[in-house]
Length: 380
Ligand SMILES: *Cc1c(COP(=O)(O)O)cnc(C)c1O
Image (cartoon, rainbow, N blue to C red; front, side, top):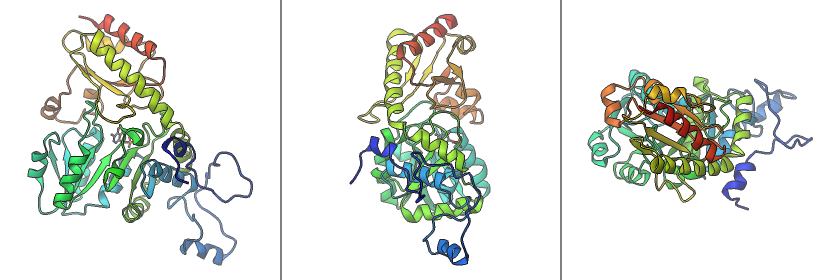
């Protein structure tokens, strides 16, 4: 029977065929698997045994890839050592040296660096376009273009990508489309279902959800994921069993966390808009019928001292990551966008006063009190 989203989020783990059934999947903290005899081992190569060596596959990491694939309604998925390695294996499965990809200007800083520094060095050409304007993307298309790469919700200014339009453009020009769905999560957005070829997640963020694991997930159709899996194995970009297990534990509560965090985020965004005079509040609209995600960014503007603001946050920690159950704040200018050239940063609207808030599961009124206190102390 086909399960619905919330049920799948809890019941995704594969039967591991053990005689004694533990309620939760054990951690297969092993680098390899053993066999009764050579015939038994041969079975692995005929697909009758699942695992041989943990760099190739492991029950805990398989669960993570397959669990996220189920939530994205995709047939296949793999877990990797980080969001970055998931992006790398995904892109390399589509674009070879001499080929060309087009990416948005407002990419996650780490991805921007991966594309600008590493990929180009390996001979994959990269063009940066403003994805706010489809004509800009179309103008960047070359004969050797293979891929349009984008983020469902951008960082840190939370622009909702027009995935439909990107897919139309991809279709028109015979290009693959790959979406980083980290900020939106499959709870709010399912790009594979819409028609994207590959969807990537930094599972370090909402999928793990507790800031205790670094992991990545890549999902897509069976052929493309098989190709990506080979690359993952060859590069050694696999995830460790324990990290896979932790991320799976996080995944089980994705729905309830996202619902609560988005509810809090909507309240916080409204409070910033209605009750403060920060110069800009960024909170997406129209992301999904379930809500608009759990990130809120603000530009403090001229009226506040940014250092005092960050110093006055009290229990709200300053952390250069996002998506945990705790409310945290980051400063994009000095962290995620440190290496992005000033000209691009200012074009994007990332300024001295930009603060990115990852809203947690606390009581909304306490979160509001925390920011209210910080703003009143930081007032110039
Ligand atoms: C964090 C992040 C990444 C990179 O993931 P890691 O797990 O840190 O390697 C990629 N894309 C987005 C949108 C992210 O937020």
